[in-house]
Every structure is written in structure tokens, then in C-alpha cells.
Image 1 (cartoon, helix red, strand yellow):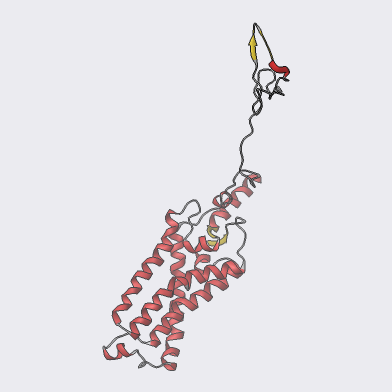
Image 2 (cartoon, rainbow, N blue to C red):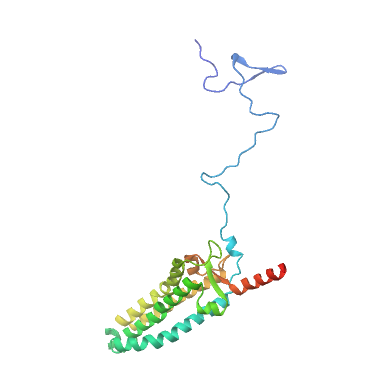
Length: 253
């Protein structure tokens, strides 16, 4: 019994005259093209993707964003308030409890100005007190005193405009007032224990912290500083919100 000449491949038509006939008694292949029109093409879509990508920051970008200069002014007000009351309260306690003559070995022998009472005072005034000051106010009201004076507020990015959670308030304040300052006090401690000139390393840390704040200038589309990006928060202009509300109310009236 001979094998079919078309084994392992589909049969091919053989033209004969004006029409065509199929050799070997083979059944012509099924016609998938009807009416001369090709079948509709299906658009390829990655597995697991049920809908097109949605930019969930678009809604937040429609909020009235806070101007950079007013944000800087609010931050300056908060720092001055904490520094004035902090130094007035903490420095006398630090000098009384620790004493002024408890500097590190190298600082004692080389006449260094850095000592443990000063470091403790700076750490408390520049890190601990600002953290408590900011975390409590953001968690309760969504704004610090400086932001309240200049008409600014802090809200969530997702969902856009919602009040901060307690976790977000504490996390934002920790990044802003503790994480940015860790390197400062590392260099101060090294200056006390090893060499005074290591205190100049604080300049590098402060330069990095300044860049974290200035990030808001070129950040798009929400103008977030690095601590805002990490905490999922956004600084808005509450005066702009009220003005928009007044215009809407006047139009409806």
C-alpha cells in the first residue's frame, strides 16, 4: 500500500483549465476567508492586563499646588519657633545635667569647642523637638503652625486630597527631621571623640538635605520634595481652594 504523497503537509491544489480540481480525492481545505475580507485582527495585550494604564497622579495634579516660596517660608517659620523655644528650654538643662567640661578626649586636649552638652542640645532642638512638633500637628490638623499662617496644608496623593493618616504624618515628620539629620550628628560625635575638623562633614549633609527640599522645584507633576514622595503626601495651597470655592458659590448664586 503506497503512502500518500501529501503525508505530513497539506494538499496543494493543481490548476487544470479555467477551474481547479483536487488530486488524490483530497478534501479541499476549509475556507477561512469569506466575502473577500480578511478576518478582524485582535490586538495583542499582555497577560494579566485587563485595562489600559491609568495615571493615578492626574487627579492630584488638579489640586491647587502650594507655591515653592511660601512652602520655604512656612518651613522657616516652623524652624525658628522650635529653635527659639528649644534652645531656651534644653540648653540650661543640658548644661546642668551633663556639665560644660565633659568634652571628648581630643576636644579637651586640642581646645575643641564641641562637647556633649552642645551635641545633646543640638540633637534635641534640630531633630527630636521638630519631629514631635510636626508629627503631632500633621496628624491632628494636616498642617503645622507655619503652614497655617501661610495658608498651606498637607494631604494624601492617593486618594487625592484626603486627610493624612497618622502613619503618613509620623513617617513624613521622621524623614524630614530625623533621617535628614542623622549624618549631622554622626559627624559631630566624630568631631568630639576624634578630630574637630570632622565637624565640617555636616556641611555635606546639609547640602544633601537642601537638595531634598529643592527637589520640589523640578519635580513633575506634583512638585513634591523627597520626603513627600516617600510619604505619599502633597503640599497644597488652601487659599487657592477657598478662592475656587467662593467663585463656584458666586456662580451658582
